[in-house]
Image (tube, rainbow, N blue to C red; front, side):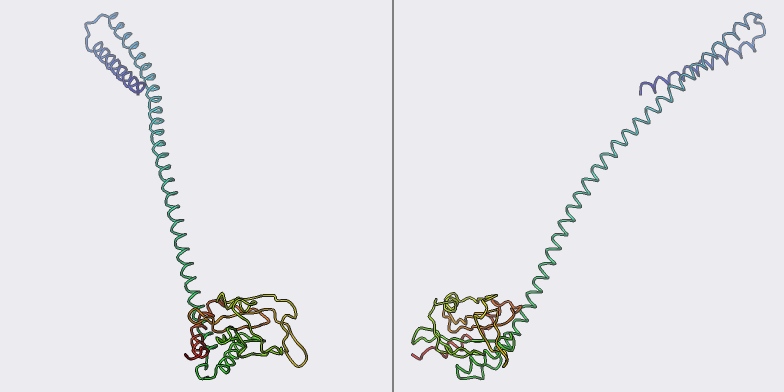
Length: 286
């Protein structure tokens, strides 16, 4: 700013000198009574003044240019600083917006996953309801408990493709579980019984929780698959049928392949359909 002011002053000085020269020349021309040497002095003074004005003007022009450049640089730096601050603010805002967007995306993804999960669960629940209906179909038309279990195992065979099944019911007179019905069961031990907590069956009856066993030992269970030979199932399912706080019956099912069912949920649905009937028919009258 100092160079700029100085340049302006020098330009003003040069203009003043130039005006003086012009007046001197005019004066010399308009005053005829001046002597010859006086005119030469005035003209000499005018020439010197003109030279001085030209030099001063050139120097002032250079200083003015430098001042203008400096001023432009200062303006540029000021603008650049402002721009940098704006860019920094824009970057911070962009980052903040990106974080907000990422959070919104995460929330939307979580919401969609929750909806998809709920949809899958609803579809699975609907499917298991249909399966439970198939397993309990026509059971109400059966009055005899042994026939009831026969029909129950037969329905399981249609849905699960079971190759062997045993239905046990609790006998309160002996406080044990005894066989009430079998499906493709060829062992002669049809009088087998067990108590609560005895063996795998007894433990399932005690825990009241469905149990699935995979990859059971070879020849653990032998079933006749045709007139040409035997097979050995690899998957066992133990389903307790619970009424109130009492396991009133237990189903033991054998299959060659594991079924893609939520057995815990399916067992709950089957329990709602059959457990009360079984309890009412095995409890001795008071």
